[in-house]
Image 1: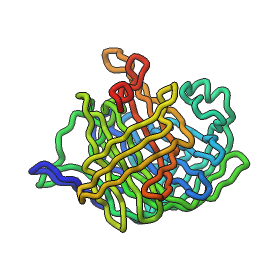
Image 2 (image 1 turned 90 degrees about the horizontal axis):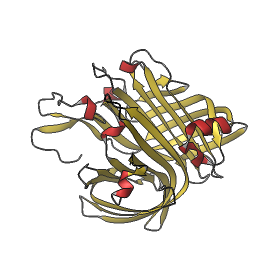
Image 3 (image 1 turned 30 degrees about the vertical axis):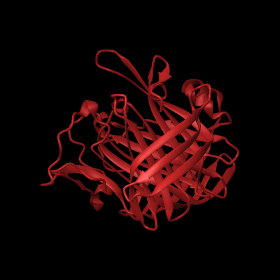
Image 4 (image 1 turned 30 degrees about the horizontal axis):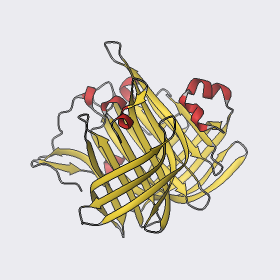
Length: 346
């Protein structure tokens, strides 16, 4: 685990795999996220369900990357009552054995996008592209230790947080293997690959983070990384993440990511230099194979319109002669029509 300031510790227990008491914060969000990429079939996807029980709905996202570059996508805000299960809008997460085995399933529709960049204007994209039947059945197996948890005081008591400035109270991640199948329309794809899952809970506004670059990747069952660079809101960035190798995590001490961009300021490639706490160094390159731009909008109490853009790219990574697959997820607040992290040089 990462070093913590004196008087604090990180707590993570098996029951954290299940829903928590949401408390009274209106913007409480408990979310579980999974991705998987099959290195042979060049297909994969990611899945997220975020319960907002104090607002009586969930956020549900399904995103499938097909071998020819098409993307199947669906998003919804289905109604829920309470914070009882991760099961809404056709997407369901079942904890079979905490920290070891989970199942992800989906049954519903997916928007089939031959030109995924059209999702920059979601209303038009949903109008102009077909929705087809879609099912997902995946079994996830944890292949790494757990990374993260809830930061608490040494006596176990919770820290005070400002719900309006919060992105999450607690967060953890794990590298995984996943097997199963996905179907979209009349096409079916067997999946046997690797990915990363995470969970977070606590009050959340998507606008609480200035910007970030999040790059989870796998080069096989026993080698993967998660690179994280997060804007600090002051012109700088916090660098972190971990390298998973030979059954253990080596935490990242420094991570510099240099990206290439297209005319819309979407990432097309990246190069990263990584140094770990154990003193090991890695150089990683990534090429985006297929990308979908997503957004979140919120109006503040004083009427200000805030917009967050999240670009989700299935990415082929190379490190030390190895080839792997994963995601490059870039989050930016849009300021004067431009992504603010890009304007800051990241």
